Length: 347
Image (cartoon, rainbow, N blue to C red; front, side, top):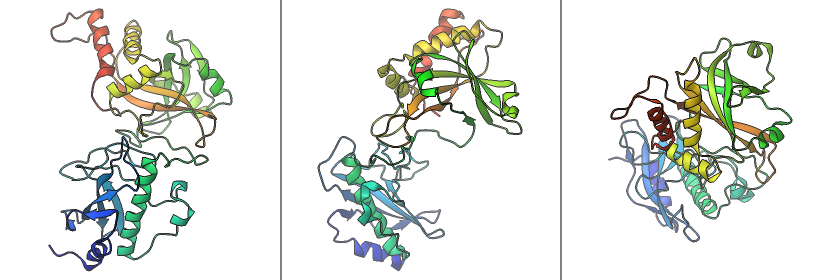
């Protein structure tokens, strides 16, 4: 395959690099992307999530002149760190994962001297990204990607989309109010935004018996809207993040993590399903909301209360059945208890 001269120039420039070893030549795919597989070496000792040698692909798209570095499917990192997209497997036969590190922006972990601006020339720009990756893996291995005083970024997770979107509004006493309800759960009304298809607002928080305990202050359009969906809230004492920095990938992962915080999600689902079946309306999915205190900057004390939406939860209704089991309340409780132990991916 003919390799463009500018890309061959990249290979020549890193041929004798002490920490970068190309494992094959440039190749292109049906979408017009050019990719080069290589191994990057840590400057220090290996860690639980980054070995001394990790496999990567640098991908160049001629049409947009974009440069992106991805972990290889084989030999690449599988965890997600700060300043990185959620590190999931790609679709089809891609030889790389989709967890590209964020290398294009300044980061205190890289030091001021490392941020001299991206070169315009294609070959220099690609080499620049490779050098930035070396700084990134070194910082990731030593736990220095997140620096005190930088804005705190929420971790990446599976199935994240821009819509549906649910908004919440904070209040000055949020931290104190929800701290007093840590590890408790209840229900929340969701009002559909006027004129929007799949956008909602959290309006009235309720306890397990549906008594209102807190109302959010919105404008008239939302405040006067009738509830259109129901959510299930759980108040936590901290952000539900797995090391190094990612949201739980499956229901089982989430259940295990919440259990370490003192919340048994199986118990919550069992009781929530039972409570709902005693009401007039017991059908339809519910959205799970995890609430937790959050700091604006890394290293600072929490300054606000944040909500994370996980959907959709299919609690059993009064007609739910399971093959091999009697169609009764005991079976429906059993079904609801097993839902949060499944290996299915969260959204």
